[in-house]
Length: 273
Image (cartoon, rainbow, N blue to C red):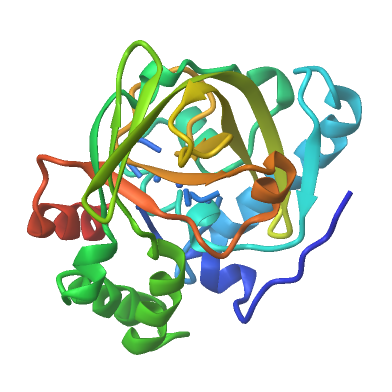
C-alpha cells in the first residue's frame, strides 16, 4: 500500500478542520477525499484512537469483505477529516461513522442519484472574501494556524475552474467551465476505502463515463463522509482520466454546495457545523 506524508499539518490540526465543506451538511470531501477532533476535546480524541485500534484489528478480518480495494494514505487533510465539525446532532453510531471509524461490512455502494441536483463551487466565495469569517473562526478555535494560513490552505483545496455542476437522475452529469457546458452519462464503478495516517478512513464513490462530450473526465469520485445511500448536502469531487491517480489526490478537493444557497448561508453552515 502506498504511503503519503502529511503536508505541513499535524493530524491534530487537520482533525480540527471542517469543511465542507468531503457528507450531509449535518457535517462534509474534497472531502475530499475528507475523522477528526478538536484540540479541546482530548477525551474524545482518546476514545477515537481506541476505536481506531479496534478497527485496525477488525480490518485484518474484514479485508476484502466489501469487494473494494483498500488504499493506505499516510496523509491527513481537511477534505477527509472535517467530519468532527459536521457531526453535530448525530447519534453515537452515526458520529463514529462520520468521523471515519467504520468497518468494511458497514460500507455500501451508492447510486449517482444521491448527488442529484444543481451545485455551485465554493471557490468564488473564498476568492471574494465571503469565507474569511470561516477562516477567522477556525483560527480562533484552533490557534495552530492563523487566519491567513487557513485561507491559503483552503485556497489550494477548493481551487477549480468548474464553477457549476448539475446531476440528473438518469446519470447525466453537466460541468460548467468558463461559462461553457459539457456533459456525459456516468455509471457506477463501485467504491474504494482509503486509510489515513490519523487512524480514520474515508470512502470514495466512483463513477465512470459511459458516453459524453470530449471534455468530460473518464472518472468522477465523490466524497461526502457518508458510507450508505443518502442524499448529499454538499460534497468534494475529484475528476480525471486515471482512477488510481485520483485516489492519491489529497491536496485539491473542489467542494460543492446547493446552487440555491448564497455565500452567507454557506458561511453560516460551515461555522455552525
